[in-house]
Amino acid sequence: MFTHKQLPAGKIVFIGDSITASGRQKDRDELGFGYVRTIRDIYISEGKGAEVRILNRGVNGDRITDLADRWMKDVMEEKPDYLSISIGINDVWRQLDQPEEKQVTPNEFREIYKTLLAETTAGTNARIILMEPTVIEEDLHSEGNSRLIPYVHIIRELAEQYDALLIPVHQVFREFIEQFSEYKLTTDGVHMTSSGNMLLAKTWLEAAGRASQ
Image 1 (cartoon, helix red, strand yellow):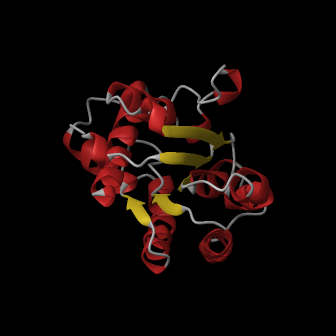
Image 2: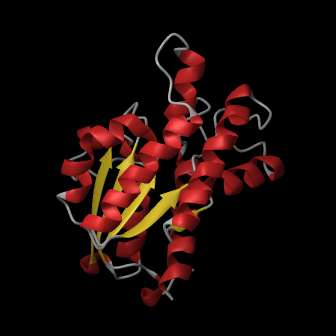
């Protein structure tokens, strides 16, 4: 499916929430057991393991505000060749499970994300990769998915504005659910099954591979 020239090389930092973290704190390699590890394993299976260094900087429960708090340490100081960002699920999920908490509105989400991208483009040479958020429940008409739409659109806009590579995860997940609803991509509506992680990794690698040609 992939060829050596199609896979980005160098240091790749993956930053995001629990979908990215996927138990990395319990993993000796600190890669976790989700899509980040799957991507690393595909590099190895393609004979390109020695040409890439993958760092997982996912943290459970993170919203865009939490990324901002740790951006200097986890991104700027690492000076990655590629930076893959996956955020947005908890910015919406907190509106559903903790409505009394101060929420991250779409406008605030956009402004904080823009600031982080501007800092990154000014302070590093990283190729930026923006992942759309996945889904909130495998019911495309759920309240969570309805509230997620503005955040997806913002990420698409920012990808174009900052010449970033967009990974169309939300679109791919929606298409899969529409066609194959009998197969579960999540364990609880948010966190990935092994199939969900494989779909994330496959989508990431295919988009990154096309951009690297």
